[in-house]
Length: 121
Image (tube, rainbow, N blue to C red; front, side, top):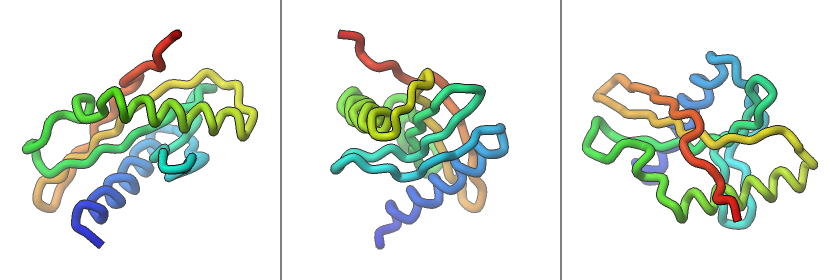
């Protein structure tokens, strides 16, 4: 398994622990709809929260909000719609990003609420 995959999995575990510590109730992780995936699905204060986890080493890469491009956002939204339909969920929904930045033996977690919104057509 590659270092990048290991780093991503570690970031997802840290993001989940971070969200739990803030009172979020995690209901699914790594939920798939075909090739599209939602990293973390949780409920917080009556809202379904869809979380994309991004990991990076120090700050050699752009900030999290810049790496979730429009194509990735559309994939997440598509998977979310499938999840909502499959489980007949009618809660208000928002899309967050949790960024985990690794520094040698330490890490920093940044939570961006309402990081993006579905396009209204």
